[in-house]
Amino acid sequence: MSKLNAKQQGTAVVTGISSGIASDSASRLVELGFFARRTPSRHSLLVCMCVATLAIPLAGCKAAADKKPSSPAAVEVAAVVPKSIHLADEFNGRVASINSVDVRARVTGYVDNVAYREGDSVERGDLLFVIDPRPYRDALDSAKASLEREKAAAAFADIQAKRAQTLNTSNAISQEEYQNRDSDLSQSTARVHEAESAVATAELSLSFTEVRSPIDGRTGRAQLTRGNLAQADQTVLTTVVSQDPVYVYFDCDEQSYLRFQERVHRGSGVSSANPVRVALANETGFAHVGRVDFLDNEVNPSTGTIRARVVLPNPDHLFTPGLYARVLLESAGTVPALLVDDKAILTDQDQKYVYVVGPGDVAQRKDVVTGGMADGQRLIQSGLAPGDKVIVGGLQQIYVPGTPVAPRQAAMGSETSSSTSTLAQEAKK
Image 1 (cartoon, one colour):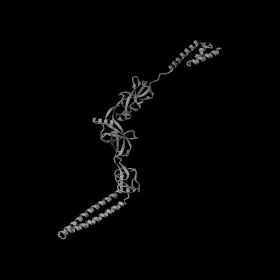
Image 2 (spheres, one colour):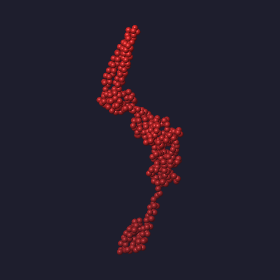
Image 3 (spheres, rainbow, N blue to C red):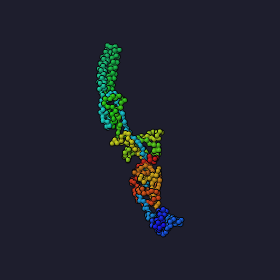
Image 4 (tube, rainbow, N blue to C red):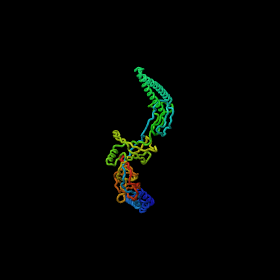
């Protein structure tokens, strides 16, 4: 075999043994005669394997030497500072009208006119419906005619009684005749009173043909239109609900009820004088203020809740009966609490935790128990201490506890010292 063939075979053997040896090293081995023989000996193969083994760590060491150490992660930190907050609970409620009336027909008849616009606000006494008044007007005229007849009969009976009294003085009439005429006068007078009552009833029935709003409020749709028969005291023509103020009913759970009752005994709980804040479903804050005016006398054993009611001014008619509302029930006193930015709280399955700057400027994990929101920040019930430097920015650069960090001071949310916390509802979750 020629020298060129020997070199080619040697190069192939070296490449098959390890890809970690550079091509110039393999060529150098061939030139030195390691693979000059047609069939490599056992010693030659051993030498090649040793060279390949030594070449791999040398290449790795060279790559490691070229790699530069990573710099600390730049993060923003904020110190935990105690703040005074009002403890509060948030509940779900429903808006209800104080007065809600089913407007019914009080006389039987056919609807002659719908005199209002459906959905409009009305005042007490405004005309809503007109029931055909003709039968009741005729009944009134008949009652008035009967009254006139009875009055005429009573006047004649009075004349007869006075004549009998004159004749009785001169003993020109019997006692029986005298008493009969006196009795006729009394009966005629009674019939006049009866006729007057009939006229009053007919006038009242005639007035009932004009159906008017009994309260100030907003009307609903007309249940009957013109030409339909309305039955007295049965047919509902429409509904009217009051709008200002309104009620907000909510159910308070046992734990919250007991907690607030305990604070009441300490003078820091909820009473009728405490402001109650209410918000609608599309509102983020609690801008509407009312007061609790009713608390039920027992807890519902089926649901474990007790019904309470808030009176809320509604001058702009923003609250419509039936709307969902959120109720924030505050305590009177304040307590110190720890608040952190909500963005600093991370989740590991069902465990909440934050990163704080530990000794040596490294990220240290601390598991926390969170509460509700207060002034845009999260209430921390346990896990942190005043003065802990919580990492609030640059968290995406921290993958594991112990990561070196370069902290930069930042503010922990708002600087206000008093706020309101929705504690219990989220603490139960």
